[in-house]
Length: 300
Image 1 (cartoon, rainbow, N blue to C red):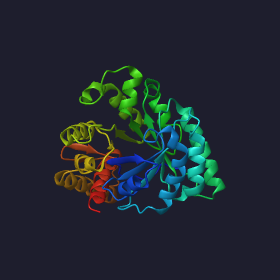
Image 2 (cartoon, one colour):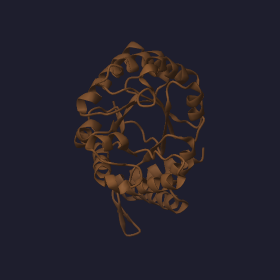
Image 3 (cartoon, one colour):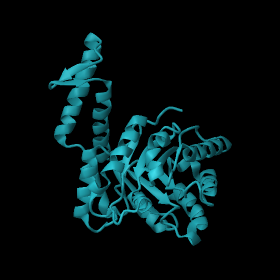
């Protein structure tokens, strides 16, 4: 399996998997990706019933704007994970783009999910490898194993920082107002994701009514280099999308770089050129193309 094509994930909106009303609202929102949640957003008493609700929603709900369709299973070491995968994917795997794996501790957790998804794809005659994995890093152990986790399967599309569970795992007294408080785990996760060639998604801002805080957090994450941010309420989406959308000046320069590189290749066979006193090669093009793809997504 090859790595997936570049996907825009400025906003990943999660909603409870037991509420059809909320899943319908999320699917019609401004999010780039919608995640129906079987884990933290579902009470223990609702987890089994929620599987059927998520499977039905994936088949029947209309997702606007070319959204990534995802759902989050329970952690691999729980009693629910394997049925979360089997029941939902056997019923609705053709409508799933991503399975979100929480609380990954090491590569073996990813490999477990990968192998089970592979078997379900084969049994249901689904396209091999089409269903991707996004993995939440939420513990100190998971953070130290982040690169191995991101590299454990070609299905892995992103690492996501789960700040609340991480704060609890390391014993932090709070996690709500100062993104610099967790500068190390953010930087470590970002480096691991980039080294493995996958996206990096920043944590949620739990004060969903404090839109100024949402904007501060989103702009901070974008400046660091994250591809997007987790969201828990539709009101957060336009603010986060704006923070991760390139400016007109950035887009104009991106197009100029891509055009100049193509011309140099066609006319002189050059693989590295200079634009505005800056070296440009194939690695640079990936960054610039991503900006143009984000802009195209924003115009839909």
